[in-house]
Image (cartoon, rainbow, N blue to C red):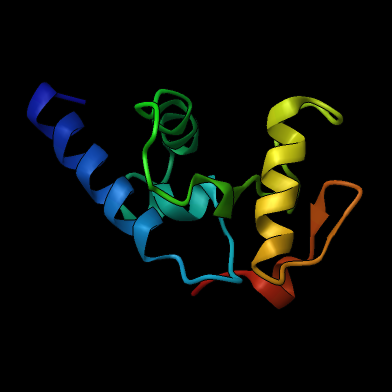
Length: 105
């Protein structure tokens, strides 16, 4: 991606993630596709990994294509994401979320 295109992609990704309603999730690939770059799911993950401290973006609503939390089980971030999703009414069982029930769009 060219530099201007990278910035546009970043803005689109953050806008889309900010639009995921409470109690719903989206996959990295879904966000990438909606942002116009369907083969850049990893780029979405990269952007989320490098969010500024204190960001209010609901990063916890983004999961992998298998409906799972991508952090290692029992890690601090895994536990945090699980707790945040549960606080919004999303059922998380063994790090897995039922995409058919909770997927946005």
